Image (tube, rainbow, N blue to C red; front, side, top):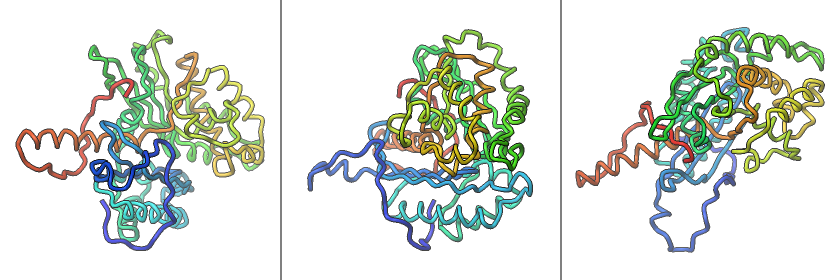
Length: 377
């Protein structure tokens, strides 16, 4: 999904999530020839890239990139993506494209979510991205976004849970999903909703100009109203001890980092951790007393998220009101990982079919098909 190059990006930086082991020169030729996969997630607030190599049915990270671009800034009021937001986003995507070319990626999928779904000039912006970066973006719907996030979080599923509520608080929308355990031990998506309840939207609607005017009560009220329909449908969830709630968003990972007392955000500590609901409550109550400057001074939040973190807290607050579990699971993973796992699994099935036929595997395009999501990996 990458056309003719148009410019270079920044120097490559290797991600440290699962660093590949060093190989001796001339050794492990099979590992060296493994194809690389890439996924881009262009959201309302962030642009993210992940480049990986296959490792069994999972993957090992080779490179990554993330930048806050505020693509949805002003979208709520105007209905359009602004020129400045487009320029910021294209600059980030040029870096992604450069990294993909240098890595000689063989299989990739580039998706855009709520801002491009909702903007009146979203389709034109997608065409501009292709002209200026060579990247062919695919605008996906909310159901697909929720499904891919669930696949990406599958290794965190609790084998003792009967039901899982997975929520992803984005910049423009919140995806919330219920998964039910099957007799086979796999989890199946049973219900999902994509709601215009992102942190950029909430902050723009309700925050005031003063340093302490966060509009938290107003954001709570809107979150309750928009989540009500989904929550009312989940009548089968009655035993909180058999329910796992997983949060995959900047809000949840930020709150976890603050609660853990990290000097700076560290994905290796945060991803996969569990946080007691009472501790999350204390963090939210404390953050509500801070000014925006004080929030920005916290190195786990920073100036780029200072005006957004409490909007995400309001959504989390409502979810916990409805399902008062004792702890939350925290995921610094989701959509990109779901894309990559699906590509890898598709290729594995294709190779298996090809071996049975005695031919070479075809290089088909990614499909939006339902993939079972197993617990524990």
